[in-house]
Length: 171
Image (tube, rainbow, N blue to C red; front, side, top):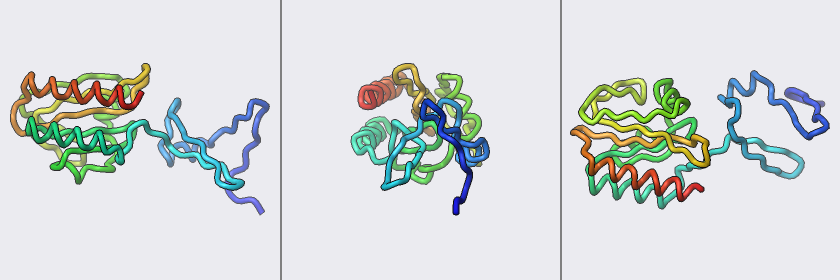
């Protein structure tokens, strides 16, 4: 007895994932999926270039926090995956419409003096820089620098260093 939705494989080996399932799992057009095989099962998972278990990225984020006293948040296409110490509670939070808009439009945002920013359901008053991470022409996430004080050009240089490290690490 079959359960779930049944789809045929076409001559090119393609199977359509029903719209209802894509909506529930928030799978967007052109999003990458990872394909795994487990015995006689094909398992599709959302794919991300950036993972929360990348220790070298975590270490660099914490070094930048220690040097600059500025917090760092890194996202993939869907959620926050890496943070400096003060923002650990944000790990796993899905991106809101404001951050998704920055991601989709590949905008760089700089508020170098404290201003309101809504990352979660509450606003925080911080200086911030938000940059999309672009690899081989594809946006793979966002990198953010946050601070209770102004962000300086030296701080921006550290952010560029982290951005370049991420791009080289993920290529």
